[in-house]
Image 1 (spheres, rainbow, N blue to C red):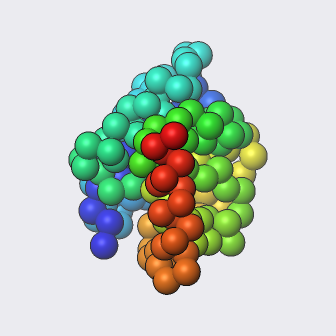
Image 2: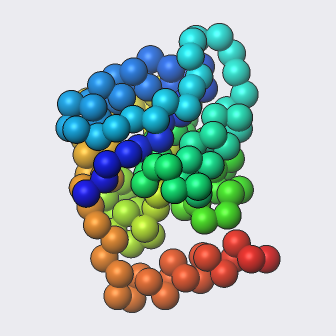
Length: 148
């Protein structure tokens, strides 16, 4: 069971971050808030880096990053060794990225999806286990790419 999730955003995802944090806390999950802290314009790679470090250093099991589209955050997060971040816009993708890719960060677009859908996607993301088996070899291949 997931106990700690690091959450970060840029100005485009600031409002969602609060909604998401409240939702996770209501499920008994500790939230590590990695910012940002207002609607003032900020640079998304700074906050992606903070969330990734919480995961790679073992302080959080999973992460959630929110920006306008989810794309910038996913690009920034995937620059970090050991991170598998997926920008998702539907529940099927949110579930499958955990089941098949063992993704450890869900990236969401606050300008793309509504909060209800975002919360459903988060629930699926944190409740879906990695299937292993044939998918393990593929995730291992991804880990090998980190070494290049």
